[in-house]
Length: 282
Image (cartoon, rainbow, N blue to C red; front, side, top):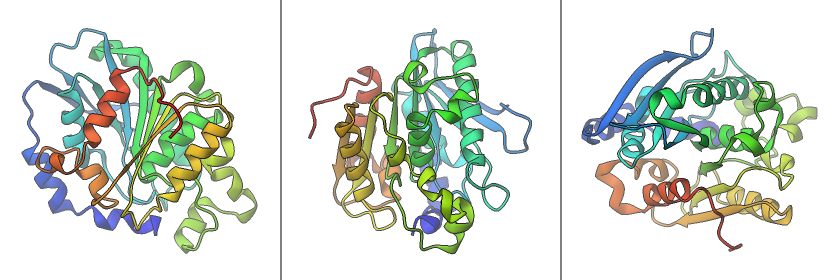
């Protein structure tokens, strides 16, 4: 089911959301190179007048690791920037060009770029958060829990990340039934190593994990099991469960035309601006 997620996010719907999202108060800097590959490009959205103290969010889009592009999420960049946050939205390699862990290496390079350049765009590198939806939530949470990927860029998630946010993320999705996912994450012997839940040690940055009760693409159990594992290890995690949405709408409601359907944007902004102070176990 995860591999089908990209099909839910039609080009027309995204174009409408991007068109209707206000641009006032936001400075966008598109098509910045962060590596040597053809997809090593990112866009930055920042509050007008940001002066070095704004929190920074690196956002990874979903699409089943085989589709997606950064331009489709301009609405999210603007929405968060209008709330005082510097937003970095990178592309990353996709299947069939890439397989696990290629996209994690790309994501880690984008994070290293964001930390190194945060101050130039008005952000605070000490307030660096990762965020993602669906496959992008996997990328964000995997980087926050499995130290290997950021370590390759000279970073440590416990030291260099203020928090990570996963929206409708797959964190514990074995066994695989999709042949495409088997190709992306295989061979069989290494599959346990590909699961974020198997890398929880209680020492990672605070997490905000959100899902929707009606998500039929990535089961809400992924969020529940991941949160339980983090708490059992002594880590910090907040959870949110919304109703009446869907897998795609969980990210779509961040856009201005849909925002009244659920307080996802408010919850994300509160987590970031509060410095990721976890609430008691729910």
